[in-house]
Length: 210
Image (tube, rainbow, N blue to C red; front, side, top):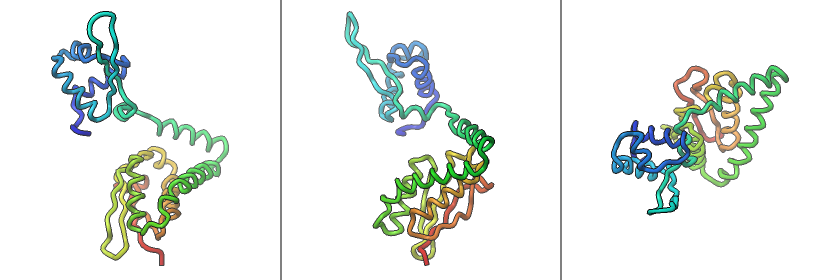
């Protein structure tokens, strides 16, 4: 984002979420601030690609611009997908047993491996680790990697776990991630810290295969 989200800009997003679309003047009236002040906030939100503008023609006078949210703005509103997923997993385990849960995580792992593996082919290990960190970063894991003291060794750290609610109850998620990393990287991978098991972050040590 170009600037931190202010309280007023969060209010604008909330108003647009409820109404669907509004003009700058309508927003100014509700927020009880000047039209100029609203437009400054709208410019920031547009720059961050959180808003889109539509020109509405009127019977009389000049067309009016109205603002609405883009898909990118969804991140600023509460989501409980993890709770829903956890409910489904618990129901599946109750109906069909733990083996079904294991199979689901295995199928997910194989699907991810099939998608990511081609991106790794032919790359040196350092670039593989960099590519993996970028993929995990895009998925919300806040992933970073650094080179180790030893030659050709690396540390991949995930500071956030977007599936923490699920992983905390189903450690298969953590085991599946470790297995995935071992499958797509041309390296030995060891998980030295796990957030779901009480660690502060998820940390992986990566080194060339012997």
